[in-house]
Length: 154
Image (tube, rainbow, N blue to C red; front, top):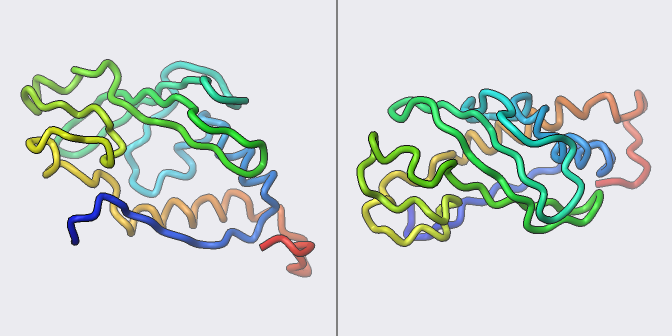
């Protein structure tokens, strides 16, 4: 892998944007679409999220780390078009007993500046991202009419 801290996967989902957006804005359903199999369920917050500033906390588990929580705050929101949340370890020093005094702030990897933390990233592989997209498509499959016509949606 190169030095780049950007891992990007692009796929098309044959479903109306409203259907995909409804799934993504409901943290209660995120375990259905987790291709990395780390999510264990919603710990706090509500669903669906409705705008910038909304927060939810997810229970997580990963091999080598064990159980922990992630806090996600919605930082950009355009209905049926875009939702971006910033994930962070919750509380920020929760894994200090397992990882030492490593600063994991900027948990999305692009904002991690502690060189000791960089070998821990990326936490989600390209294959796991592709699996998540496939799970989103599967969860939204009932949106596509039997004749396959998506009404111009691509």
